[in-house]
Image 1 (spheres, rainbow, N blue to C red):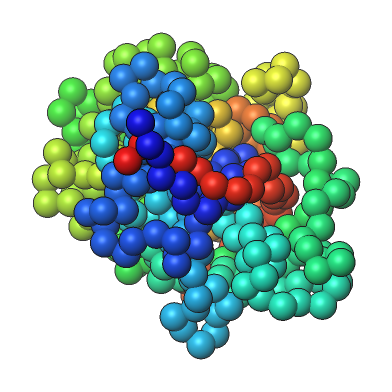
Image 2: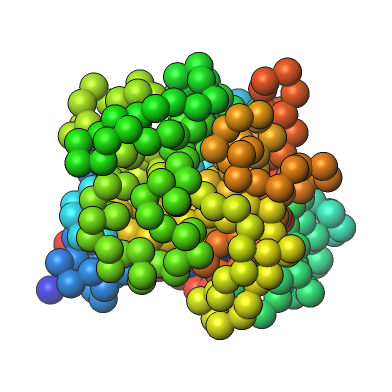
Length: 373
């Protein structure tokens, strides 16, 4: 059997990994492109492991990125994100991956798409899925993005060179409104769940937020414990799908996409143990989150979800604001299963002006990815 070779780079960005492509090396037609990405990543896989592809069996490791020339004058590159389902033949193009956004600038520099002198680089990224702009700042040495550094992030072993990401005007990334329903708090009804108080917010990506206590959880549970509760997972899916309708993202609950809106259970600060066995004290965090992504409990927190939470915590009477410590400084400390992530957010006159996070990224492999003809 012959195989087709496509130039590609395998990169980690934040707590996610994905296969990066030049737009010039892929067809533009989605009907042709989707099967290519499914084959590259190894989906669908009924065993959930994606052994016959580059994916890792969970949503944070089942992703594709396409980088091309800019289509707007205030940016240096176009960045299109593809979320690939693990167990079904679905490629979702409706959202962005905040974590992999951190690898876009280094990829562009290392691939020679942008010529930048040594020192601090600024790469202006047009995020095509959400039509938003991201500014990536990182160090360049000898014409390449710096890799080594002393910056550590929760969920990733070791340290690396710090990358600053400024998400400009993140409100209404998908729905066109920061608060799609016009309310900071809604009572949402879902079959088998009843009425539950939620905040539906769209900053970088749309998220529906509720208190973990409203589903009988403490909010300190780890992903495996959440997924073991079939009743909780079913309730979260029902709430998420009905929220999609309320947010104007689907005509019916059954029409809601897999990737967005995401759903997050929030809780007030409390001592808990991370996935690597570390104890995080309540005084080290401002608010806690447990998020579901592509029908799986996320082992950290999607970066766009954390940014959404950072914005929501600054809006009075949201679920996030009610459960968070009073936000007085520049950052909100978000506790998640892998540790604590600090998110900066500016909200003024009811609008999200910006969201800031810090990540690391690293090129893991480069060359060609092979797929059966």
